[in-house]
Amino acid sequence: MLSRVADKIFWMSRQMERAENMARILGVTANLVLFGTAENQRQNLLAPLTITGTEESYFEHHEELTLAGLIEFLALDESNPSSIYSCIKWAREDAHAVRWQITSEMWETLNATWIEMRNLRGRLVPADGATEFFDWVKDRSHLFRGVTYGTIVRGEAFDFSRVGTHLERADNTARILDVKYHILLPSVEDVGGALDYYQWAALLRSVSAFETYRALYKDQIFPIKVAELLILERRMPRSLAACLDQIAEAMNRIQGNQDHAAKRLTGQLHARMVHADVQEIFAGGLHEWLTESLAEVNELGTRIQRAYLGAV
Image (cartoon, rainbow, N blue to C red; front, side):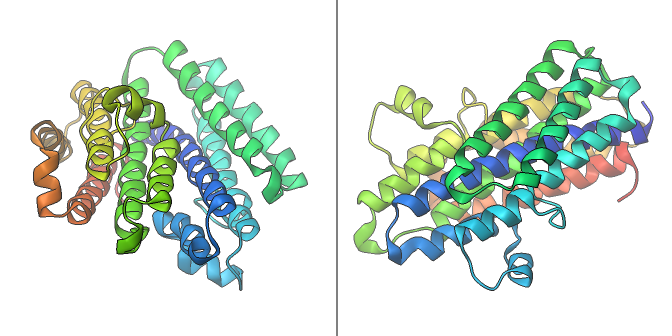
């Protein structure tokens, strides 16, 4: 497959996953702000900017940190390359460039999503009606992923789509977990209290894992068990281990002339997840472990770009 085509398919899928992840983060933030206390409101509002690394950019355009401003910036701002609007726009443009390599159902789904996104942006999305918009974004992402899985031929286009999706998902899961544990860590007197419980429950809901946690652990929410679920539990589709399983499978099927470095790092990351132990992770520091994992996932993306998609 031509590197240009592979690049478009890789980023088409990655952008749609990114749009969904942003909708999840903003949806949980809106709930935290709605039900949180006045003391932790700024902390809750800063969390999405910390997760996405856009705090500096936000304050270049906004004087105050508000929920409405956050939604406008992270959901609708065309100048923000990480906004939901920008992600859907670029996913549609990538799909348009390779229409002959994807199915008509994939193209029609993305094109319809983009048209509706433009109409929604024209009317804006008020803070009090944002939940409906976030659910719509997640539904469109699910639809696109399902259509892709159900219609595209099993070949390199399918494999690059899977790699893009799960690289983005692994990055997002690690960032969300790290922000809750490292940045939203409550004061000593709040640990184990209602605020701490609600934040952990919100984190689980942001990755559609609340019911899964209840089903697997049948216990109250403990940080170490949340970490185990979101890092090592292969039955949890958004865990780091499940994402690396999918990436490793797809990378094994992709053939390239200069992809040894990318495949070697894929194997190392996959083996790390297979043999990891949550008690050892916590003993060495969860924040440090997640920071290292994020750096390695980012490096893997760079190596894949170099090996298959053109120089970076």
